[in-house]
Length: 86
Image (cartoon, rainbow, N blue to C red; front, side, top):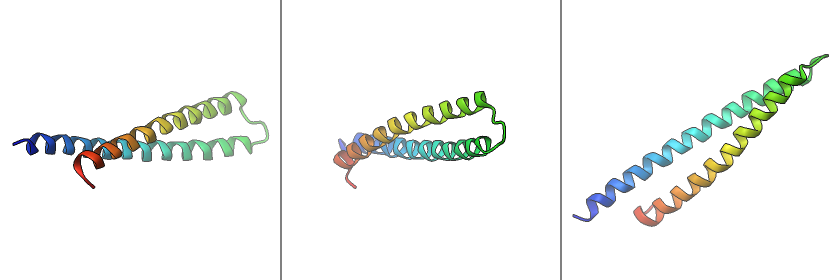
């Protein structure tokens, strides 16, 4: 009977891992989109410095979130491997 609660925990960890992986993909896509937009803005004759600063700030914030997400993903994967097997 002890395996049933463990299986439930393993299933929850698997779902959390998939969720974090999806969040990472979404944020990476957003960073790519913002980077492309930034590149276009910077290439204009009179770029909007305020908009450039805002986009840079958004990219920096997303990159910080990605760093946290990657650490969290790694921790969940390690815990899942240790507790539930590969």
